[in-house]
Image 1 (spheres, rainbow, N blue to C red):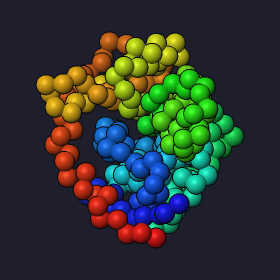
Image 2: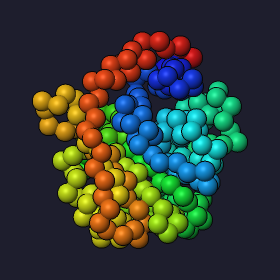
Image 3: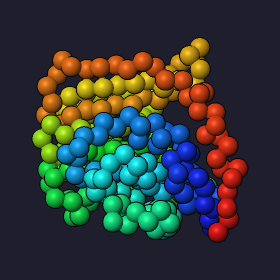
Amino acid sequence: MTKVKNDLYDYGLKIYQAEDKFKFSLDSILLAEFVDLKNNTQRIVDFCTGNVPVPLILSTKTKAKIYGFEIQKSIYELAKLSIDDNKLNEQIEVINANLKDALDYIESESVDIVTCNPPYFKYNGKESLVNEDEEKAIARHEMTMNLEDLIVTSKNILKNKAPLYLVHRCDRLDEILQYLAKYNFAIKKMQFIYAGFHKDAIMVLIKATKNGKLGSLKVLPPLDILKYDSYKGIFEKSEKI
């Protein structure tokens, strides 16, 4: 595995990645920017954290303690390098574990915010996915967790009325809404993401609160990711490690 160190967009931070593996994406930046932070926010958990782009970005906006859960050992090691390099060890802690085991590390109903940029695709059980590249397959497909696992675990660790922030594909929105309703989350904010407004939406950002009241959903103006063209160039400025 060839390690590289990149600028984290324009946040003044560095992030370690594997040159030939699954890199963080614009999705993570949009998710981190979607989060509403308050002065009394003390504890944040980021599931499927990867090499911690969301915790790194959030660290520029809050003093809260941030925990990231990453199941893959090699990606977890990259996350630790990023935390060390940015001298954020006291604020960010990455945990090498499945999000389904979060209660082994985090007290129940103790978290102010949960964020997640999860695998987008259902796992069909085909070994070809794993044989092609197991790390990429786990990052993209629900091989170690699924939407229901995420929402149930989030409910277990979140304080009452605390929010879950999620970015996902629009073609799974109906399923997301069903699980949120099943576990008594109320959607408070949504934003649809486009790659040009002449095309269908490609992603959706969701804020849903645990045991929240229905009837106060806010749909933000649509966002065109083409304005983030400068993001595409960050991987061209890589420092091999």
